[in-house]
Image 1 (cartoon, rainbow, N blue to C red):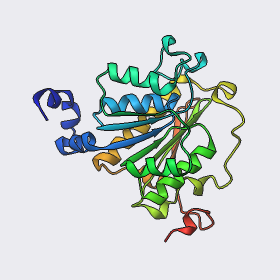
Image 2 (cartoon, helix red, strand yellow; image 1 turned 135 degrees about the vertical axis):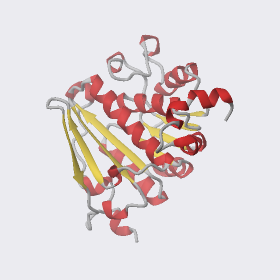
Image 3 (spheres, rainbow, N blue to C red; image 1 turned 180 degrees about the horizontal axis):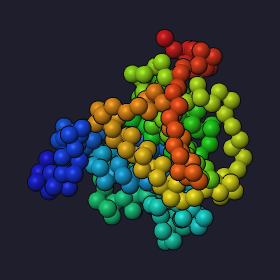
Image 4 (cartoon, rainbow, N blue to C red; image 1 turned 180 degrees about the vertical axis):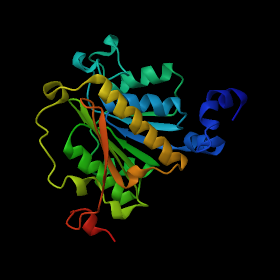
Length: 248
């Protein structure tokens, strides 16, 4: 690292849990972000600013006017553009490098190949089908997954890590999925709640990449902004999970 890079990342370097070795791990890391909405916007910004070496940005959608209150990567000039292109413009203007754009819905062999290239995956998608698919790809490739979700004024966060098989996977928590019929615009979501959960999702990703322990490899964290209450729920591998029961 040159003097400018040392100065840029000095606040992280001074953290005893991080140090220069942790920052160097970030600069060498490859992260796949699935979804560039309210969660993915914040995650991409924080990981790029933290110096993550390579970010693969996946989203098939275009920017809509109703996205702007919570999807902080975009402005009015981006309405109608692919989210990947708009994200690239914003992040590049902030000095980010190593960006790779995937303007499609990841599934099947393509999803598996993208996950296999990553050191960590951040699932910032907004539907159970994608979350299940990303979870399965990460489990089969033994790649850490940081999964988050937000709706209305609540959010949740967990880390699925290959070193913690007893904690199970995302499907262990939600074996039947849920109702994906309504979008955030129909159910409603408070923009700053999406931002808060996104910031914590990025923090968990940074911790995993830097080798900093986190209880969310074993727990689910749930937050309710109406009461400002959060709680951690211990996770257990479900013996009937259709994915986990196929693994050793």
